Image 1 (cartoon, rainbow, N blue to C red):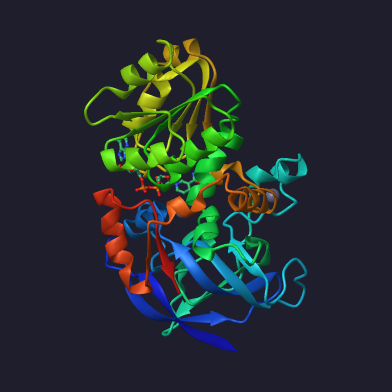
Image 2 (image 1 turned 120 degrees about the vertical axis):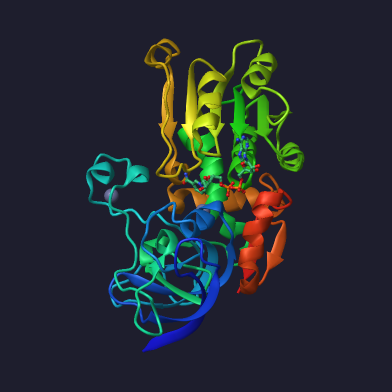
Length: 361
Ligand SMILES: NC(=O)c1ccc[n+]([C@@H]2O[C@H](COP(=O)([O-])OP(=O)(O)OC[C@H]3O[C@@H](n4cnc5c(N)ncnc54)[C@H](O)[C@@H]3O)[C@@H](O)[C@H]2O)c1
Ligand SMILES: [Zn+2]
Ligand SMILES: [Zn+2]
């Protein structure tokens, strides 16, 4: 049986998001069918629309989702119909060279559904990050379903499925922020503010939020920033150095992903400090740095894929912290919208008013 549902599709580069009937197959081996409850609008969805991820149009957008498993393939044991799940986009394989050496967070062969969802005319859809959750139902690999507490607000915990996990993990996992560290975060959208919250949670004593938009800086303060820098008005490298005794921060997180913000991160960190790139650059971007500075400043330059998270370890732990009032996931949900409002939500990303718009299906 094939399920006919509504989904938000982009047919070609920069085309508007349209609501289309999509066909979702029954789950085969290793797959799960999920009824979507909520799905956040992430900047990565906009990157897909702009053709900045790849050219495999048409895309079925959406990937920060909570849902309920409605059916599973014949051999699936990790989840069952009725389970409340947050979807993840890195279902580890357990067999590749990263998994074998005990570093599954770097898995080089993560799993998605084998079968494709299609438009009514049979055109295969590319599901954003292998999820495609701006739809009433989606088909994923069973390992992409992380079972969670059914009582937690789906709109809030679904954000762990991408941006908030990426930001928290960029600080906690990739940046390895420790008690007493100084941390600067450049770009305070959903990902960056989560990095601010992650740095605060890990015990950083100086947490500097940097953005070109003053409204974003207010949010960052609410979520744990001790200082803010408006980089449209002042030089962020100078400002971060001033706030850290003239030295620079121990960890600087670039949650924008542009050559200019990366360069700021590189020079705003202390000697032997860490730069974490969690913002995603587009294919046309290149970076030039004096190689002697790369050597002379020491430390490490890291990228953070999905906050180097392990969904099965990190989602339930973070949901516990949320329930205990120690991680304010509700603060990330700025507005709840319908599937018709995704294009407007992309516009609001630029206006600075919104941390996350969450679609309720
Ligand atoms: N690494 C991952 O696994 C992962 C996961 C999710 C998202 N991302 C990426 O993270 C980035 C941020 O995503 P988001 O959803 O928070 O986006 P967003 O649009 O909500 O936020 C981006 C923020 O950056 C600010 N900004 C833009 N240019 C700036 C500049 N030059 N200096 C300082 N601030 C600037 C904007 O004002 C905004 O507040 C995107 O590139 C997204 O694709 C990465
Ligand atoms: Zn693997
Ligand atoms: Zn995302």
